[in-house]
Image 1 (spheres, rainbow over the protein chains, first blue to last red):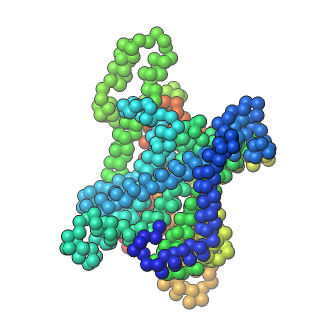
Image 2 (image 1 turned 60 degrees about the vertical axis):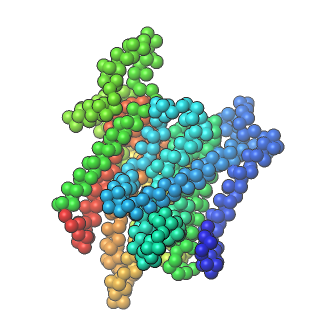
Image 3 (image 1 turned 135 degrees about the vertical axis):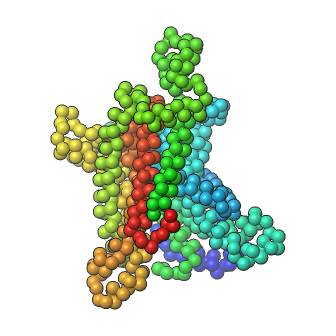
Amino acid sequence: MAAEGIPAGRRRRFWRRLAGHRLATGAGWLLAALVLAGLFGPPLGRAFGLDSEAVNLFGRLAPASLEHPLGTDELGRDLLLRLLEGGRISLAVGVAGALLTALIGTAIGLAAGYAGGRVDAALMRLTDGIIALPLLPLLIVLAAVDLTRLGLPATLVEGGLASVWRIVLLVALFGWTTVARLVRASVLSQKERDYVRAARALGAGPWRIAVRHVLPNVASPIIVATTLSIGNIMLTESVLSFLGLGIQPPLPSWGNMLTNAQELIWQAPHLAVWPGALIFLAVIAFNLLGDGLQDALDPRGDAGF
Amino acid sequence: MAGYLVRRLVETLLLLLVMSFLIYGLIGLMPGDPIDLMVSADPNLTAADAQRLKALQGLDVPLPQRYWRWLMATLSGDLGYSRLYARPVLEVLGPRLLNTLLLMGTSLVLALAIAVPAGILAALDPRGPVDNTINLLAFAGFSMPSFWLGLLLIILFSVQLGWLPAGGSASIGESGLLDRLRYLILPVLTLTLLTAGTFIRFVRAAMLEALREDFIRTARVKGLSTTSVVIRHALPHTALALITITALHVGSLFSGALVVETIFAYLGMGKLIYDAVIGNDYNLALVALLLATLVTLLANLLADLAYGWLDPRIDYGG
């Protein structure tokens, strides 16, 4: 996180401030635990001969037991194994979506800031327009579109893994506006500074100026915005998957594990509780971590600690 | 001001036009178009029949031409028929839009009724125990998956306690207001809790900023009580920010309403859009989506205008 150019004192202050933010620290540990569980849980389970997709129609909707610590779902699959497997997907979508969002946002922000004039105006109107749209209804249509009608091969656009990529692309398509605004503002405030003019006079191209002067200045807000967007993206993914338009079964995600839970809510309320609780915990953890980072990276002194 | 109004109106209309083209194109890409559905429903239809039907419905011309034809028909007031409901689109949409506005409006008012006092209390005790508690609750509010909150409330109030219906709009054979209200409680509660968290954060931030202003310090030095400083001086100062945030929030409120309506089988626009998209009701999905977009864009426009009207310092320069 701390770039090489940042003096050790500032880096130490960052860690001290972040550690002083108890909620953010707790959130960080919780996320580390969730990520580790998602990374190592499923392979470990397989090594012990446990199969998250093993169907047992005689053991449907079983309550918690020694064999199934959290019970089983409507097909008799072990809920805990499915949660670990699903967490992998949900967290991966959140992180990948946020990174892609930051990348697109940075590119558009740089373009708008440098080009100025009409290009800038057009890009900013586009940003305003996207922010004003009712997101979920549009995402539902976009998620429902049959891409084979555009001539894309079915092998590329259908199936579980394709649905993961599709969600990542969809959320990035609408999510880039925050980062774009941050980067554009930074370009505008830096590009007329004397040292940047000097760098330009010495022959530095726009690319070098962007990488050496503009981006380091806006790195902190980008990091904060990206952390916060992971939570939002996970929420969007879970809603779309819940509605049957996101991650496609049999691939589990915390969202699509809740799809059938509503019909079964009278018989097996526990099915509705666990996946949602994990989404909630992961999202609130990312939001608290983002909040903590914001305070720790804030250049305006140590106020409040 | 008038020049600004005209410019913003033109911009809004342009954006709506662009969106209508995009949505029109997207809807055409949904799986199973009307002709496909007819073909799969009737084994006697041949490929040649399907082609003839396409020509009859004007589906064999390129997208821009089809869009133009649709646009002209729409502008002349012909919005087409809904396939799912077998009625004119407008007739289906009207009551649904009212239901959604009722749900969104009630939730919005309640969310503000929670957020304004909570945000003020938090701002009066920055980083103290009150602030920390309210802050954590606010974070919980906007980190909550909307559908999960709905499911939890169903588990608590319908499954465990049996107090409230788990979904629907009214009991069979009942038409009283009290009965309808019982069906409104859980959807409204869900949407309110989801919205309040974000608003609390905004009220708190706006209040903190207001409390730092010089005129507030002057009022305090004058010896006014905290209550009267907050209510008489600081709160009006935050009104602008609140109005803007509320209006900018209409889009996400709509997204929230869609989920809540789907979970509670509440007959509003959100559920209508979802059902229309899932059920291949092209006309209905198209018009409903555009209506949702229009409502959101108008809310944004109103926020801009209210801002200019309330804050005389802002000069739009024609």
